[in-house]
Length: 419
Image (cartoon, one colour):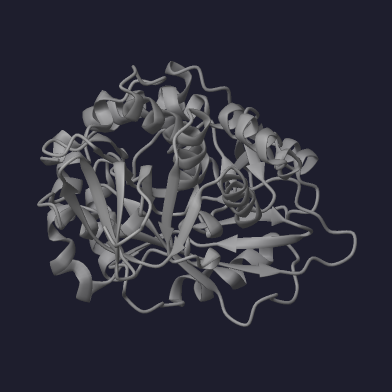
């Protein structure tokens, strides 16, 4: 600790939705908080999210039948999922565990573990947004998954069965019903699944900035730098960042895809991959609107309304966090997406790219570190980090306080990876 520097009750590493939710929850319990983050809003995975607060996002990527599609992914022949061949040797610890998890029993168990948290995602976001003046950014407008043929829709039967088992409401739609919900979409979809209890965020980046401002207004200190290491002290933990040692009674590691590298500084090894995604905003012609986020299952893309424009988002690219952007996916889906919705000019000069932290079993890592009880892990949410940030923040605050978490967390334990 540098001369005259301040000690905090809680030091949060990561200024995305998970880290800020943890900071706000810790502050609500009277803790002093520091947040260490590079301070680049567009660099956070939560900035580039589709904004979907999905009631139905309980399924891990390691789904039954995915093993047969791996060659297509590796060779870049599937627009929804791509893998960087040069990065595969470094991703092998993740990939081996991913393949082991890609069977129906594990998939169903993961869905059961995620369901209690996902079920509260919308309400917890609303409660937190009410505190920071961000309620206007959240709508319960549903989420629409679209299929171009009856056979494609039939392929979702297992998912629909598991959703029904967990009480997730869905409406199965035909072409006319899709048209009633989204009259400006092209008539290329014969079937759809509508999730009426799902909501969306109009601008994820704006909402995260409101959370950041609220934490600062409540006394949180922000250090806009990169964390280099986490170390144990005599009576707590410290984060080495920006040439300083920032000490805290507890440290929360919520640094997204970079969490695994920081955990290794204390000897913890987590198989974490960068589940990268790309997006770009486009103008909409006068009179054309999109009322809710939609997913084209065949096209491998999402279209989401954002502040009067539309955000086009790609599927998954598996890579390392520092790999250079590869715009192949978004360049491939844009022409097809234009056949679905009549958007016009791009808003940005080039697409956005971000890395989401992905565990092989599709479950986040939330819990105390085995050998360092004052270190709390909170990362690995994959594509559901934005939706479940507030719930994770509440869990983290309860762990720091030594209380029973508000949600079941056993399946998220770091111990499953030796942490």
